[in-house]
Image 1 (cartoon, rainbow, N blue to C red):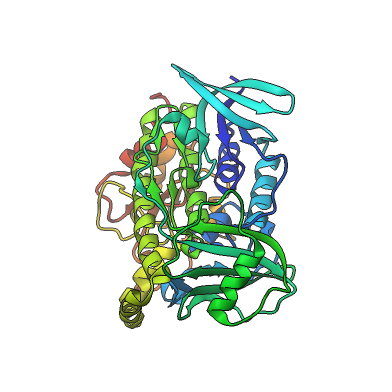
Image 2 (image 1 turned 90 degrees about the vertical axis):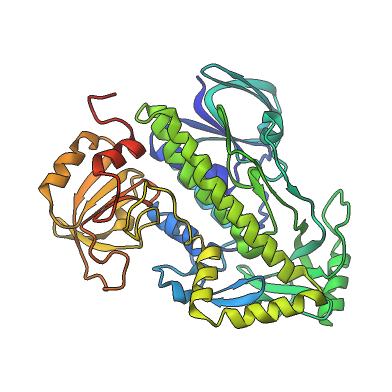
Length: 492
């Protein structure tokens, strides 16, 4: 084999997956058709869920200085994200290009083979792997790998080659995006409705303003390239009355509200992650963030199967967990599309929702949804509110040293967190010590209303989700360890 895994696409999903695989010791080759980074940034922020993921892998320091905000929105309706009580706030000024640069440096330092100027052409699947045909400036090569993962975007060649079904709805309208220099515009981070459409302004590093504009009732154009700046400036002036024709355009793009999702995230030895698996209106930057979290979910599972720790059936949970997340993503972005892009007929809907978000429960529900904090995976049932959810950041003391649950996950291994110094529990986990860190820790005082209140132990998967908790899990500890980490030592 030339590599255990070939990943197509060096965007956030592909680079995150490469880093996760290398963290677990799996050799990976990333193919990217562009010879260098484009510098384009479709996404400009990180949700709270992705901030947690990056913190778990020690990646936040690689992003440099950035601003965070306790405010978000749902379809342009402001949301107070502080109601979630999360350790992190969302990052609002991290261009996607910076995220990609940080992820690429991390993956490369871990030993990922990242090949730019290498275009995926086709593949053939055999019994024990895949043969991938790659085109580059010197001709074509063939690579042998155990698995192929398509992270090559909404127009994914891997998805098309593998014959994945991609049902959904076509775009009915479009929005125009431009990054500009030489203007000074008032920020409108959550967007603003005007008589004829929707506008948004965000300040980016380097003196750049990003504007997004969309006119009500205007169908998407058939384009062979990006819009001309004159078109963007004309729409902006019609909607705001402000002339930006003197600005210097850095990057211009257009996007629509198409909404599609593959029916399966895995077909044999081919898997999809990120926009290859789902496309939608990029409301709140959820697309890039969900893509990163797809790879965070897939990486450790694929590594466990390749190492022989776990059976191949573990990969089926990638589809069952992330397809449901993607389905919810499409539902909430379609709803936001109606709120953002709808005309006069959507005004009553916006007014009613603006009233509803004043109710704490509604605000908390929507904030969790757009932050990626509403996710709960099936862990076999039980009464613990922790089960299936990401463990909140938990400061702890281990062997006299101050640390946290977040830092304990940096290695990409599972963690059994013994919070009650229970020797019997630790003995039961010993047969999985090659895959799971067994840690006795003293937590800081936990508020009585915290989901952690009363917990004596939790088993964390490498992605930070609680697979077992005491008390409150229907499954016993050995059963949970076997389900997520494979057979015990001596039983493989």
